Image 1: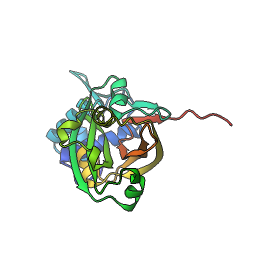
Image 2: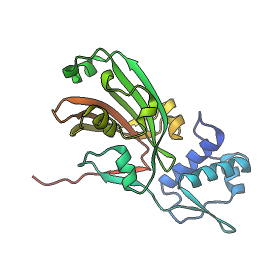
Image 3: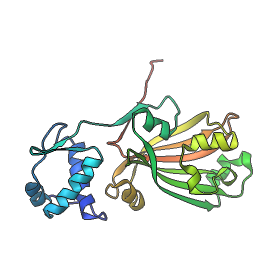
Image 4: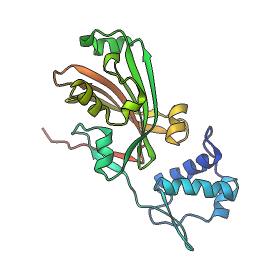
Amino acid sequence: MTSLPARLPLPMQVASAIRSRIIRREWEPGDQIPPEDELAKLFAVSRATIREAVSLLSVQGYLIKRRGIGTFVAESQTISGGLESLISITEWIERHGYQAGTSYIDMISRTPTPKERELFKAWEMEEVMEIHRVRTANGVPVLYCIDVLPKEFAPESPQLLDESLFQYLERQWGQVVIFAQTEIDVAPATRTMAHYLQVAENTPLLRLRQAHSNQKSLPILWSQDHFVTDRFRFEVMRHRE
């Protein structure tokens, strides 16, 4: 019997476990996965739970159902790109032919941390706005974004963030993001992130921490983007000195 990740509804737990096997290449693209009764025994759940998990993974593009034959692992649909070009997440997703969307938005007005006060010192602000969003590709959650910016540039309501944050800042405030200083590391999914990204808590997420600057080289946005690793792949072109 295979153990399941905790703190998710049972069908999502099973879907996460199956997805992990696909990511680890235990089941390769094109492979037929075991039938429902075998999976039910493997994960110690009902066949109804297996059907719901398989349906979820089919919608997310991991599995393909072939009537009268079985269910197969789909070919990889990873969103990839180089880190050399600074483009918005929306544009990144749409360049791969997916429809970019947002499934969750939360906005928190608060006092800046000492680091944020130093970063945004040119704006002499008293408060910052912290914005949490889950970005989707064809309805599938692919990353959890945490953006912090001076409150004076923040939208008045979440409904105004149905576009790229880069586009919003340029259209509404004339603040054009020109470059970003980026750090890359791995961070575990918090309980909230896991819930909205439909992964197990503490799942490793690729994190990009970025200080974005405008056309006058003034920092305007601090972001932490947490990517589901089997949905995004980054490439870097390196040159010998």
